[in-house]
Length: 295
Image 1 (cartoon, rainbow, N blue to C red):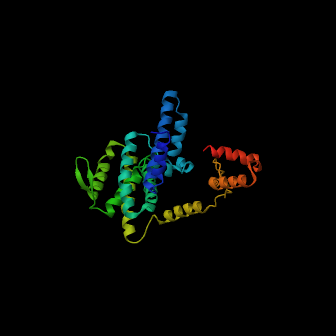
Image 2 (image 1 turned 120 degrees about the vertical axis):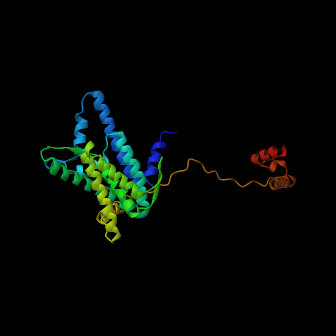
Image 3 (image 1 turned 30 degrees about the vertical axis):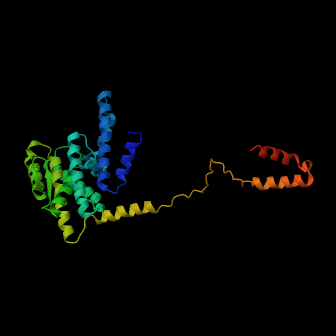
């Protein structure tokens, strides 16, 4: 493997026009960066930088803190710390994101991913402030709400679509979605209430989105229009023109000289000698005659 093959593969993967690939890339890239910072903090004995960055990317439940870091409502859905958390989220994103894309198009993937994450995040903030008003602040991160939104959208759009699962065989999407929701609900007493609430919020939006879409209204349309305008503006930005300068060829062109008609010249020289004698030849003619008479 040469030194640039990995980079070339990544570029090719991202240039395929598949939004799911871009979402996978950014989730994994951010996970790697956070993992490196955790490793540095572990061996360095200080977590100041890691703590600061995490505080910026997570979603805060306290309204007072959230107002100062509102971007957390977007960044939290791209950040993971646990290897199993990101593994299962990215696996489901790959499966159901591409399934959603194949039926409803690439342009709806990112808008619905964002809307699912935003809905789950807002429901998380609302729930904690209603159920635990005395708690100062809690945080959440992960793409689970966004992935659940895509999963439920697929299950609502094509409930009888079958997928193959290891050890279980073919399972219809509607039963898979129902099983995941039930597992979330019965897991509430075990903790991670915020994450479960976000899952259910994303799932609810995925279901509602498809039902409204089937009635003729696309909730993703404003974001589709926005992203289309931004990409169109970027594509139409004039690029500076570069003057064309033809490169000089390193090869020297050698013009082929026409071959001399040796026999004709030889005849002319012999005729000259016959008429005027050998002394009438010039030194160049004598040299030429001596050279070619030996051939």
